Amino acid sequence: MKAQEELLEPKWAKKMPYKVPENYFEEFPTRIQKRITEEKKQPKHLELWPIVKPYLSLAAMMIFVAGGVYFGTRGFLTGQKAEIPSENTLLADAVYFDEATLATEYQDNVMNKTIEKANENEKILINEDISISDLEQTLN
Image 1 (cartoon, rainbow, N blue to C red):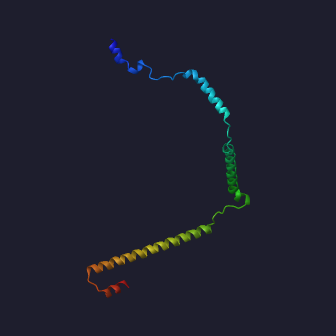
Image 2 (cartoon, rainbow, N blue to C red):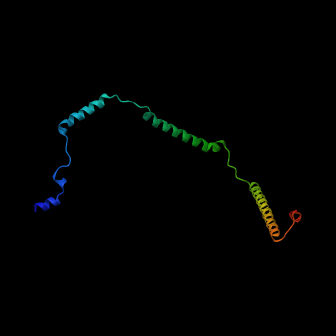
């Protein structure tokens, strides 16, 4: 029976795996007191950045808001109105757009015809035996 109990209980369960150093609890209060007195003796350094940082961020925010208000309402305060395009302006834009579209389509058509002519000339050259002078006459 004792042998079965030994098998069921692991070895670490019988002994405490951790040890406390000697005189740890007796010396603990004196070590804490020593640390406290050392911290009191050290002079505190005042750093400027943690003090100035919130004021700088507040100033930056105020400048940002003031700039937004100034530039956002500049047209409103000077009495300038937003221009609404007139019918003539819209018509001129439409005519320009149509002319530009027509010019582009014309260029595309010219290019396509040139490519078709070149393809026909290549077919003629391949199928027949043509002299260079005949070719020059055909291209002109």
